[in-house]
Amino acid sequence: MGHAGDFDVIVSGAGPAGLAAAALCSEAGLRTAIVTGPLDPFEKRHDPRTIALMRPSVHLLEHLELFSDELRAVSNPLKRLRLVDDTGGLFSAPDVTFDAADAGWDAFGWNIPLEDLHPALAEKARVLGVEFIRASATGVSGDRRELAKLQLDNGSELAASLVIAADGRNSPVRETAGFIMLRHDYDQVAIGCFFSHSAPHDDMSTEYHKDQGPFTTVPMPERRSSLVWMVRPDRGREIMELPPEELARHIQLESHGDLGRISDTTEPRSFPMQTMNAVEYARDRIILVGEAAHAVPPIGAQGLNMSLRDAALAAELAGDALAFGEDIGGREIMERYDRIRRRDIFPRKAAIHLVNSALLTGYTPLQALRAGGIALAASLPWFRDIVMRQGLAPGEENVPRVMREHQSDAIKN
Ligand SMILES: Cc1cc2nc3c(=O)[nH]c(=O)nc-3n(C[C@H](O)[C@H](O)[C@H](O)COP(=O)(O)OP(=O)(O)OC[C@H]3O[C@@H](n4cnc5c(N)ncnc54)[C@H](O)[C@@H]3O)c2cc1C
Image 1 (cartoon, rainbow, N blue to C red):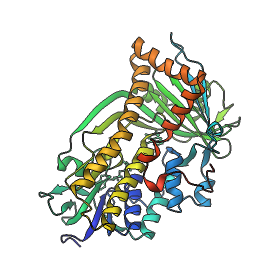
Image 2: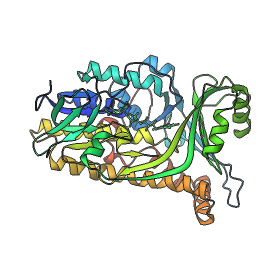
Image 3: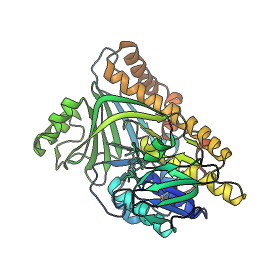
Image 4: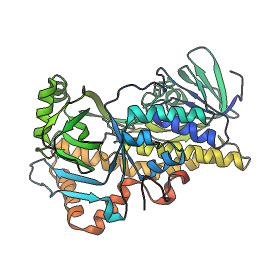
């Protein structure tokens, strides 16, 4: 190992996005390695996040034969999504509920605990022949005309036709390759935990819009849900210090008792909120995927759904190039990836930023725009349908092939 051209593709970072990219590249016949970073991706570690994976992402899991009975048993279908304007401001909108049945679907997707999804992706990548390299990347070097060279913290260097940077928000590959990032820090944190409740959730996720950010409950099996509660940092510190029974009481109050009596909260974790976006998503044999490319606040469950589309497109373009005998890290591949991902990421990032800023700034025209959008969705079925379908994924032509609609066991059309 360590000499030029050992692999067709090297993925830096074994988070969920990197593992999905590596698994799909290997499946496409590309000689693929993944540099894991500091954490063991096979180890199950508690994570307070569940991931609401929408239909295209669930199709990807099914394509990889990953949506096993075991994973399904800890996951919950998402049949209804409810928006509640809880700002109590001048421009309050009526509640709006999106029902998957209205679109002729069983469910919008599934809510899957990240602590179960992550090791399952690692195991699938291993079975598909991905080589795991237990090290951290420190950066890339050279002119990258023929090959990209990745330096590791164990002193070795690996070369490949294509490097997929999936090494998170502080991606060393992205930074050393000179990609420009646009960042915006929100004065806000997101608190995540799981909890039990006495009333059924009816497979519904509810996003309550409050004046410090959304408070979202997402259904898990039995009478359990996960919480994403976005608040100002000082309020976040107070919440993090609450004893479990007090935290339960606050969740019950904030959700207006919609889920009945709250109990059995898991230890909460606080995530700083920012939005980040690369000016370019690919160039010179490097493709950015997942949070190395873009990070958004957890509103409307977009983050990993977008990242899996990054991963699947990167693998599709590289796999097609291999099949047609083209350079898998060539300029045309870079340009196509950048163009297609831009169409998906930009509008979503803008919509999330608009909703969050409208809640945070108290700027009246922005508040009116947010409330007006929700009110339109509540009153006009055709507008609700557009929001519902676009919220799940971009148009079919911008969705990688393995994520497109097809008849499946988990979700029937
Ligand atoms: C509270 C909360 C709720 C969320 N809910 C949802 C949801 O419902 N739906 C949704 O789609 N998204 C959701 N998200 C977003 C989602 O969690 C993230 O988008 C996703 O986990 C990011 O995955 P990633 O693989 O891009 O990055 P990471 O998970 O950050 O992976 C990066 C990997 O790179 C590794 N690494 C770091 N440095 C190096 C190095 N030098 N060399 C090699 N490897 C390195 C790290 O160890 C890590 O394994 C939520 C986020 C939060 C905070």
